[in-house]
Structure formats: structure tokens, C-alpha cells
Length: 197
Length: 65
Image (cartoon, rainbow over the protein chains, first blue to last red):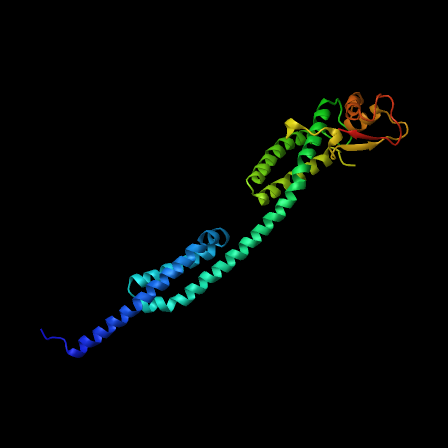
């Protein structure tokens, strides 16, 4: 077998050296990107999950390149990956601030709701109890209306319990959403029973 | 919620009625409950302003539980 020429060996040596020169920076760049992503992962998972998934895929591709020894490819892909991580952080932070503002607003709205709705339900309950004892129903109120009010009371109590539990756990957005639905239903039943002038 | 009911007197959602000339509690009960005999419910809910179910005055604001 013919021995490789000096020039072939020299070229290989240069290539190997070049590769080795890029390996360190490539590994460091990937480690830094992973670290940056780890720092924002929890927030991103909650407030920008789709964007996080895309960045994870991007990072996975870069790590594949690193594993294959394509250090040049890694270095070429890093600017885009770093920009994606930075954008992800910005989006997640903005979404978090938006969610916190919405939650604070919902917490304010929960105060009047938590005071009013139980009283509305109590007023309806009282009227339903009295009408159930009546020999004749008043004008505008039918047996069906009364029956609907009775079943409505049960569903309102159940829904209000869900709303209260959500508020207790700090989820005021859900609490207000459910609470407003109960208030609307209570208002409708009061109307049907002639409790509003 | 239902086990700890708000008294009608403290409940802003309790319906109210302003007594007109010629009204009686029975007439009001007939109007709101369809049954004059249930006037005692109105009387009980207004014990703070009524001492006698037969004595109501025009202009009085009554709670209709």
C-alpha cells in the first residue's frame, strides 16, 4: 500500500486542528443557550408554551449538529437560536404581565360578586319557599316558572361553590367568570318570579 | 350559602313595595304570592316597622321576602 503523501497528511492535520478549534466555542455556545432557556423555562411553559416548543426544537437541531461534530453548523445556527430565546423571554414576560393585570382586575371584581350573589340566591330561595306554600301563584308566575326557579337554585348553589373554590385557590379569573354566570342566572330567575319592579 | 341565609332586612336584593292607600298586607300578599293568607310572611319580614299586621300606612316601604 502506498503511503499517504506529506501534503495529504498535512491537509488532514490542518482540518482536524480547525475542527478542534471550533469544538470548544460550539459546546460553550450550546451550553450557554441551554442555560438561558432553563432560566426562563417555567415562565415560558406557562405563558408562551407554543413558542417554547419551537425554541426547544431549534435547540434540539443545534445539539444534533453538535453531536455530529458539525461545529461550523452549530456556530452558524447560534445567532438565530439566541434571538429566538430572547424573543421567547420577551413574549413570556409580556404575557405574564398581562395575565397578572387580568388577575388583579378579576380580584377586584370578585369583591362585589362575592357579596351580592349569595344575597341574590337567598332572596330567591326565600321567595321560592313562600311561593311553594301558596295555593295560587301570582300573576305572571306559572308552575313551570316556579319549578325552573327551584332547579335553578340547585344549579346556582353548585356553580357558586365552584366559583368560591376557584377564588380560594387564587384563580380569580375563573371565579369571576363562574360568579358572573351565577349572577346572570339569579337575575333572570328574579325577573321570572316577578321580584324586580 | 343556603344554610346561612341573609335576613330580608339586611338583603338589598329583597323586593320592596311602597304601601298605597287602601292596601292591606293580605292584598299585598295576594299580589306578590297569589295567596292572601301568606300576609304573615310580609309581616314577619317587616317587624322592625310594623307592630300590627292590620296597621300599615301609605308611603311605608315594606320588604317582600
